[in-house]
Image (cartoon, rainbow over all chains, first blue to last red; front, side, top):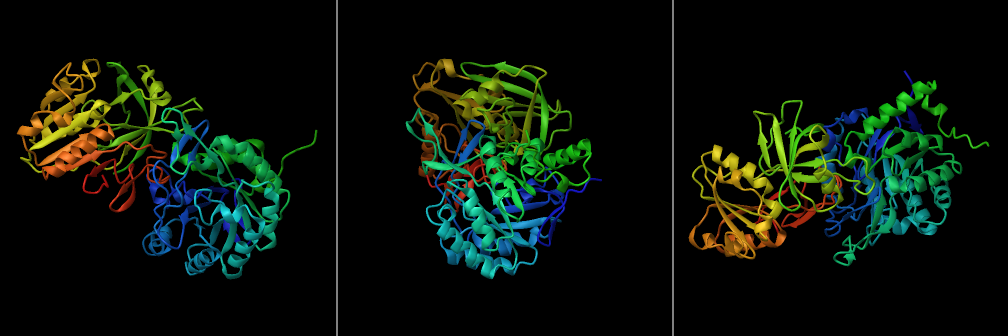
Length: 305
Length: 255
């Protein structure tokens, strides 16, 4: 048996395949297709203090090798989550991580304090990179001063593992990775979606109600991989690679580039079983290559000529 | 109801008038329970431009032969690729998805209204109603004679009435102007077609105090309620067309 586990501090993950926030609901939507407990973790839908309706329809546009979305953090709020969703999440034998979002620092802090009380949630993913809300989200994540402030404020109260999810819509993502590490993040996940847009030439209108939206899918994979490689070489905390991972080879690219784990996002829309297929593919790759532990290939990228 | 991912065998792909075609699929397993109004998410392989699956209505189901049919219109590159499938090819589906039409009680006077490709889910609905002893009136609207789809199957399950916008077949005008709506009254109306048409029928039903359900076809990402892209604005807030719909009672919609 090959060892697939990794850890963030003392938090153990049985394998490096995690379902990405906003693409996996609360897990139960996938119960018909796979055993959610096989995954290393799931990051549930971005959660805010108050219920949110999100942006008007249309919120989605298909693009070459990917899609744009402008959902805008539609969710039922932390009260509903705690009361109606959290109790059934503990049935999964995997790490359930909550992605938290706010309009201001106080929102993020209040959410972190609420999650502190939920024993079955071992980590939060601090989303400072949602491109589809006017207040908060990416506004924090593309300014080094506000990014530092929000991470510092959340770290002060958060007793769970703190994963900071970074935006790619910056000049130097390494700068934000350093800030995250300096302010006490336990891990960094990257990348969130790239800001993009699409035009419907028939109606001569933007495809999305919000004009711009977040690009995901294989179209962004090379950008994500480059950023993961840069960040993994710059920090000493575990890096979780995200961006256009459709199959196990894609996942292994990120792991070779230095990611300790990966998240599967948009791929789950096209194939709800993508995450477990990726997990099986990684295992088969290690066996075929003669490795007994995934850590033996993490950051193993051979850049010599 | 359990959803599944499965590659099904194309046993027929029959072109109809204009851009329409009917794909018949056979499962190697026993078909799951499928209800009128449900849909499938069909995968398109080998193309970067058509990255996502396409939602398609279940047109008719034959549990004896273990097959079902999809009535599809070519509207873009995705549906065009389905039109080129040959007998023996396979088509990967996630199905059955969505809620279903609420079936009326025995003896309910029932009207089905369909326009263009929106007639697709009404055949299976009509067949189901007939099995429950309800013979519905079926009002079908098309742009013109050349666009009328074969409706023999519909005649087997109800009383078919036709309209065309130019009067080249049936009564002239939109479905809402058909003389049937002036004469008859109904307990329940089911409607699927262009949004303009469904809104007009919803208006008629409100005026006549008739219960009405419509089937929406919003753009979808996943089809299973996780991407939250296909939302419709309702009295309960944003709901997913894929899981809370595609069938909505007009009382729920902000039309």
